[in-house]
Amino acid sequence: MANKSLAEMIKEMVDADRVRMPVHPRLARQVTMCLEAEGPESKQLWSLVSYDPALLCNLFRAANSSFFAGLQKTLSIQDAVTRLGSNKAAQIVERVCRESESCLQGELLSRYMPSLWQHAQGCALGVRWLANRCGHQEIANQAYLAGLLHDIGKQFLLAALEEIASCDEFGMTLSNQLVQEVLTTKHVEQGLRLFEDWNLPDTYKEVVADHHVEELDTKNSMIALVNLANKGCRKLGLGLTKQPDIILPTTGEAQYLGIDEITLAEFEIMLEDRFLGGQ
Image (tube, rainbow, N blue to C red):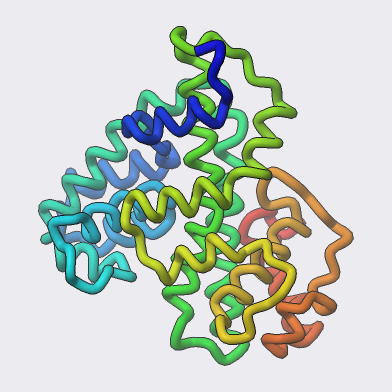
């Protein structure tokens, strides 16, 4: 292993399907309790799934597997549940929650995942809010899921790094600087590979690919919405970084979407109230 690069180690683990993305522990408990109390037909159960990137990815992975080759990829939780059947879909969700229990005991995941979860949920809620306020109500629900998944590469990479750091066969100590660098520079590439390997929806794959691009694709409003929500979250520090110098009204996304300064101020207040207690 000493002669292999970190990238090669991660690739081998991905190829062997050894990486398990964790589910937020509180959400995993709620999902388990909901299944026990109400069963797979519960609307509350599938509402809970919509808050967690790992649960959503695994549900889409099953619903768009090779068994369903030739069919249109499912783009919503309801479509995935309908295709799989509620019992099968619930079994998948339950399994992912169960596998997640052991994942979160590692040092890296416990240190970084809370920020990644906060960023994913902040971006998801933010992009849906923006879509509804700027005349894109027809894509608001899909935009929400795109926001939830845009940084899925970071969560997957962090889970892989945790496996490397805690496994005797690798014998590696990963510094905070190295972890941050890997997450920052490799998350788009890894996110795209995950979408390819798991046959996840192309609609969301485009957002993963372009959520950091400087040149806006004026034909894809969903990407602009996610990019703007992403910048809003980074400005407020919802995630691993805080960039208070970001001025949302001057961004290319805000100008392309035609969102005025007052609306964007309300957007920031909404995020603060939801995630920072209004502070």
